[in-house]
View 1 (cartoon, helix red, strand yellow):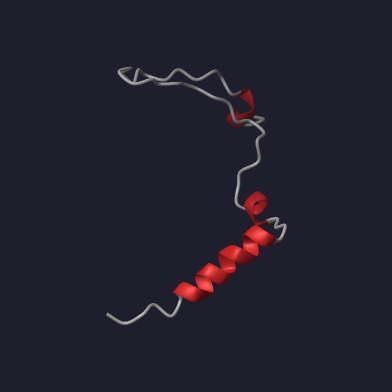
View 2: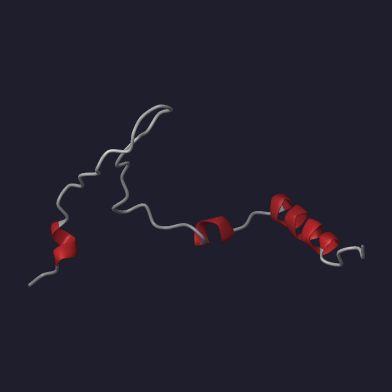
Length: 62
C-alpha cells in the first residue's frame, strides 16, 4: 500500500490550527438567534411528536 501524501500536510494543518488563534470555528457555526432546546431524550425514552411554539416572524409580514 502506498503512503498517503496528504497525511503529513493534514498533520501540519492540525498542528497549525491548534497552535494559533483562528476564526474558522466561528465561521462554520450558525448564529444562536432563534435557537432553542426543543426536546431531551434519555436512554429508554421514546420519541414523541414534537410540538413547537408558534413562530409569527416566520409567517411573513403579509
